[in-house]
Picture (cartoon, rainbow, N blue to C red):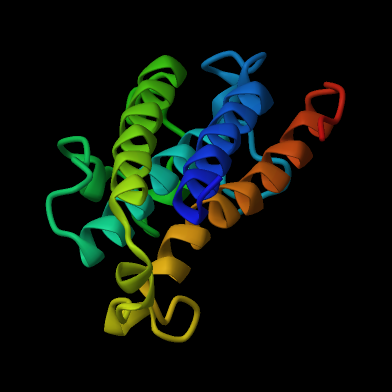
Amino acid sequence: MTQTELMADVLNRNLEMVKMTVADFSDAEMLVRPVPSANHAAWQLGHLINSEAHMVNAIKPGSVPAPAGYSDKFTKETAKIDDPKFFPKKAELLDALAKVRTASIAWVKTLTSADMDRPGPERMKDFAPTAGHVAAMLPVHATMHMGQFQVIRRKLGRPVMF
Protein backbone atom coordinates (compact mmCIF):
# COMPACT_ATOMS: atom_id res chain seq x y z
CA MET A 1 0.00 0.00 0.00
CA THR A 2 1.36 3.41 -0.92
CA GLN A 3 1.33 6.43 1.35
CA THR A 4 -1.48 8.04 -0.63
CA GLU A 5 -3.50 4.82 -0.72
CA LEU A 6 -3.22 4.62 3.06
CA MET A 7 -4.23 8.26 3.49
CA ALA A 8 -7.21 7.79 1.16
CA ASP A 9 -8.31 4.71 3.12
CA VAL A 10 -7.97 6.54 6.45
CA LEU A 11 -10.06 9.43 5.09
CA ASN A 12 -12.77 7.02 3.97
CA ARG A 13 -12.82 5.13 7.27
CA ASN A 14 -12.87 8.41 9.19
CA LEU A 15 -15.94 9.56 7.24
CA GLU A 16 -17.71 6.31 8.11
CA MET A 17 -16.90 6.82 11.81
CA VAL A 18 -18.36 10.34 11.72
CA LYS A 19 -21.53 9.04 10.05
CA MET A 20 -21.84 6.21 12.60
CA THR A 21 -21.38 8.63 15.49
CA VAL A 22 -24.39 10.76 14.54
CA ALA A 23 -26.44 8.05 12.80
CA ASP A 24 -28.98 7.79 15.61
CA PHE A 25 -29.36 11.57 16.12
CA SER A 26 -32.67 13.05 15.01
CA ASP A 27 -32.70 16.41 13.28
CA ALA A 28 -33.74 17.98 16.59
CA GLU A 29 -30.90 16.22 18.44
CA MET A 30 -28.41 17.64 15.96
CA LEU A 31 -29.08 20.98 17.69
CA VAL A 32 -28.49 19.76 21.25
CA ARG A 33 -25.68 21.50 23.11
CA PRO A 34 -23.99 19.42 25.81
CA VAL A 35 -23.41 22.59 27.84
CA PRO A 36 -24.28 26.22 27.18
CA SER A 37 -22.03 27.78 24.54
CA ALA A 38 -20.75 24.42 23.26
CA ASN A 39 -21.34 23.84 19.56
CA HIS A 40 -24.13 21.53 18.45
CA ALA A 41 -23.56 18.74 15.94
CA ALA A 42 -25.32 20.51 13.05
CA TRP A 43 -22.97 23.47 13.23
CA GLN A 44 -19.94 21.23 13.73
CA LEU A 45 -20.71 19.15 10.63
CA GLY A 46 -21.13 22.30 8.56
CA HIS A 47 -17.86 23.61 9.97
CA LEU A 48 -16.09 20.35 9.01
CA ILE A 49 -17.49 20.59 5.48
CA ASN A 50 -16.32 24.19 5.06
CA SER A 51 -12.95 23.64 6.69
CA GLU A 52 -12.11 20.60 4.60
CA ALA A 53 -13.05 22.32 1.35
CA HIS A 54 -11.03 25.40 2.27
CA MET A 55 -7.97 23.42 3.39
CA VAL A 56 -7.78 21.28 0.27
CA ASN A 57 -8.62 24.15 -2.07
CA ALA A 58 -5.84 26.21 -0.46
CA ILE A 59 -3.43 23.57 -1.81
CA LYS A 60 -5.17 22.83 -5.12
CA PRO A 61 -7.91 25.36 -5.94
CA GLY A 62 -11.14 23.86 -7.24
CA SER A 63 -10.43 20.35 -5.99
CA VAL A 64 -13.27 20.28 -3.47
CA PRO A 65 -16.59 21.95 -4.25
CA ALA A 66 -17.92 23.68 -1.13
CA PRO A 67 -21.72 23.61 -0.91
CA ALA A 68 -23.31 26.91 -1.87
CA GLY A 69 -23.97 29.18 1.10
CA TYR A 70 -22.10 27.08 3.64
CA SER A 71 -19.31 29.64 4.08
CA ASP A 72 -21.86 32.15 5.37
CA LYS A 73 -23.98 29.64 7.26
CA PHE A 74 -21.18 28.09 9.32
CA THR A 75 -19.15 30.87 10.93
CA LYS A 76 -18.11 31.60 14.50
CA GLU A 77 -21.09 33.94 14.74
CA THR A 78 -23.63 31.38 13.51
CA ALA A 79 -22.38 28.81 16.03
CA LYS A 80 -24.65 30.54 18.57
CA ILE A 81 -27.82 29.95 16.54
CA ASP A 82 -30.26 27.26 17.69
CA ASP A 83 -33.03 27.86 15.14
CA PRO A 84 -33.71 24.53 13.38
CA LYS A 85 -34.84 26.42 10.26
CA PHE A 86 -31.39 28.02 9.92
CA PHE A 87 -29.36 24.82 9.58
CA PRO A 88 -29.63 22.08 6.97
CA LYS A 89 -31.11 18.78 8.10
CA LYS A 90 -28.80 15.96 9.16
CA ALA A 91 -29.21 14.07 5.87
CA GLU A 92 -28.17 17.13 3.85
CA LEU A 93 -25.15 17.74 6.08
CA LEU A 94 -24.01 14.13 5.84
CA ASP A 95 -24.50 14.15 2.08
CA ALA A 96 -22.44 17.34 1.76
CA LEU A 97 -19.75 15.90 4.03
CA ALA A 98 -19.59 12.73 1.92
CA LYS A 99 -19.25 14.76 -1.30
CA VAL A 100 -16.51 16.93 0.16
CA ARG A 101 -14.66 13.92 1.58
CA THR A 102 -14.97 12.03 -1.72
CA ALA A 103 -13.35 15.00 -3.50
CA SER A 104 -10.65 15.17 -0.81
CA ILE A 105 -9.91 11.47 -1.26
CA ALA A 106 -9.64 11.97 -5.01
CA TRP A 107 -7.17 14.83 -4.38
CA VAL A 108 -5.09 12.73 -1.98
CA LYS A 109 -4.86 9.93 -4.53
CA THR A 110 -3.19 12.33 -6.98
CA LEU A 111 -0.44 13.40 -4.57
CA THR A 112 3.13 12.41 -5.31
CA SER A 113 5.94 12.41 -2.75
CA ALA A 114 7.03 15.76 -4.16
CA ASP A 115 3.47 17.11 -3.78
CA MET A 116 3.41 16.00 -0.14
CA ASP A 117 6.52 18.06 0.53
CA ARG A 118 5.20 21.24 -1.09
CA PRO A 119 4.56 24.12 1.32
CA GLY A 120 1.10 24.31 2.81
CA PRO A 121 -0.92 27.52 2.90
CA GLU A 122 0.75 30.38 4.77
CA ARG A 123 -2.22 30.74 7.15
CA MET A 124 -1.86 27.07 8.19
CA LYS A 125 1.93 26.85 8.37
CA ASP A 126 2.01 26.44 12.16
CA PHE A 127 0.01 23.20 12.13
CA ALA A 128 0.21 22.11 8.49
CA PRO A 129 3.52 23.21 6.97
CA THR A 130 3.21 20.97 3.89
CA ALA A 131 0.49 19.65 1.60
CA GLY A 132 1.03 16.24 3.20
CA HIS A 133 0.33 17.74 6.61
CA VAL A 134 -2.89 19.28 5.27
CA ALA A 135 -4.01 15.87 3.98
CA ALA A 136 -3.17 14.27 7.34
CA MET A 137 -5.01 17.04 9.19
CA LEU A 138 -8.37 16.26 7.58
CA PRO A 139 -9.20 13.10 9.56
CA VAL A 140 -7.58 14.53 12.70
CA HIS A 141 -9.90 17.54 12.59
CA ALA A 142 -12.96 15.35 12.05
CA THR A 143 -11.90 13.05 14.90
CA MET A 144 -11.59 16.00 17.27
CA HIS A 145 -15.21 16.89 16.50
CA MET A 146 -16.24 13.25 16.89
CA GLY A 147 -15.04 13.55 20.48
CA GLN A 148 -17.41 16.46 20.92
CA PHE A 149 -20.23 14.39 19.39
CA GLN A 150 -19.51 11.75 22.05
CA VAL A 151 -20.29 14.32 24.75
CA ILE A 152 -23.60 15.07 23.03
CA ARG A 153 -24.26 11.33 22.88
CA ARG A 154 -23.77 11.15 26.67
CA LYS A 155 -26.16 14.04 27.24
CA LEU A 156 -28.74 12.23 25.08
CA GLY A 157 -28.23 8.99 27.02
CA ARG A 158 -26.80 7.19 24.00
CA PRO A 159 -24.00 4.67 24.22
CA VAL A 160 -20.53 6.11 23.81
CA MET A 161 -18.88 4.90 20.64
CA PHE A 162 -15.21 4.35 19.85
